[in-house]
Length: 293
Image 1 (cartoon, rainbow, N blue to C red):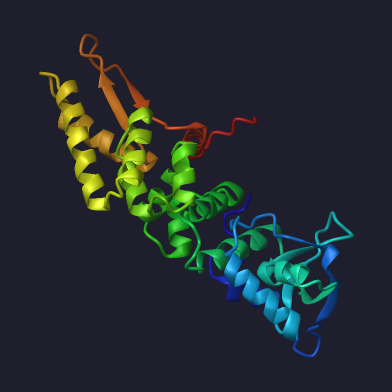
Image 2: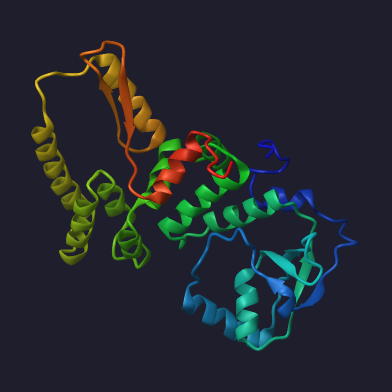
């Protein structure tokens, strides 16, 4: 897929502006709600119930003032996909409306996906996992690297990497994060633990004991130091190997170990750790490996 698609990475306004119609020709149509389907690239899975209820009440009283934006898929003659305005769409259905004002735009799949991601990343209530999924979607669907995503969105590469690593957490911990039992800060601290059983154990401890991020980090540091002392060996790695491990760990966003074969100089192996199938798929994507080939 072309990584230099026109209009990508410059925000919602720029994406919409590229498809802007002449003011005299801009048409607002009343579309049947049954003919509308959500954006398939929508990273948001949950909508705030109170905000949705308030919007529903407003629509019941006054209707929808701002048209939603939709597109007509080439392979679907019966439906329209929502580019922007899914909350208005959902609220209108609950309000018992049959139609909704809409503007139809010609938008490519790539532009549609980035519109959905950019629109939601601008919302303050997007959950950490939804944000991580948004970055992952950009990488997977547009064949982008972490560095390219960070450049397009104006965020640092470590920032993007920290969120993507959340996708490798065990499902049990993801649910804690999704339910806001764990904070983003606590989840980031937990990522330092490589042992899956210990990872879940410390997550439960953080929730049950209402640990602050600083307290949790201190406990994890003490645990990590204990583990390091157990594994400490008399032989130390060369600065070249240590630097290589650091560089690889920064790139893959997970623990990487380079083991030299001291009995056979010049040979060895590289071990890349992953926490789940999702984390393994993320690593494959960084290696540009397509398992479907």
